[in-house]
Length: 375
Ligand code: AMP
Image (tube, rainbow, N blue to C red; front, side):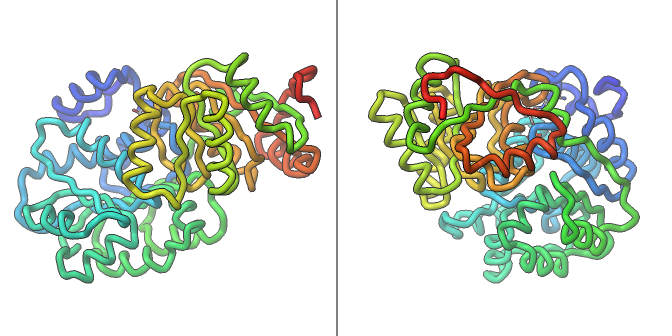
């Protein structure tokens, strides 16, 4: 299938071509025709599969066909993290270039006034984290009664982050007559039941999360004692890894510690986690993307939705707290057809969790023997 087969308007076809996309990804192939037909979607797909374009392209197609509107926003997109919301907004900007479609991103942690001013000037697409959206509504700065398309992205993360009550509140404020696009990387029971209450006769769309991990990512395991982890990481960065490296830690303190350790051995490194200000996080991400910082150390929540194409390597400095998180983490590399490397440092205590991971991904992660820090 080519993008031409999807019947998107000429402007979008051009935008996709200038973004360098030649063929739609599986999630785009499956979702775009469904969204264009007006049906709801229940999509199981993780970040890195091309999911943003899978909903952004048909939404832009519709807004463009409808022409300018003076009413309130017609599209509402909820995302769990600031980083993801910003990236979705950037995608709308990239694909919708020249289309005169106005989007606004509403995030906590920054002043609400400029966001309200932007809404007052008129907006078609609102991209928001749930808490700030409700704040803005409480300020009577935004009404949602013209919303015809509602997107819930990374619903499972929303659940993890405690956003479920906010989502339910938001759903009450948008018209019942609407199109809803629901995406989640995993489908625990709470997610299925939420989907059931907010979707109408949805089309199920799935791309298997195992696919990028087992086929595209070169996974390796390093057994190491806890107190040798930092030495091993420095050694890997010096001797074995090329290019940008995203390092995951379990805790914010852990992220800061790894960051300090690497700084002392001369690595250009930044950390992002929930205790950093929005400004600091954005700066760190920008420095990492443009190569000024070689290593970014992140906690799972902070790293959600980070869109870095061409990220060659992910290092699990701490074993992830669930097998699904492992899949999420290593999905940050090998995106959209690139191949990647994912290294996991495992202490003897991590063996149980490793087994669970290997069960989920249905393969053994090959262990690297004879490294200088073997534990
Ligand atoms: P997402 O899953 O939306 O975060 O997208 C993952 C990455 O894939 C982003 O960097 C997109 O720019 C890129 N991408 C999306 N669709 C395509 C496509 N059809 N061909 C190549 N790259 C794509």
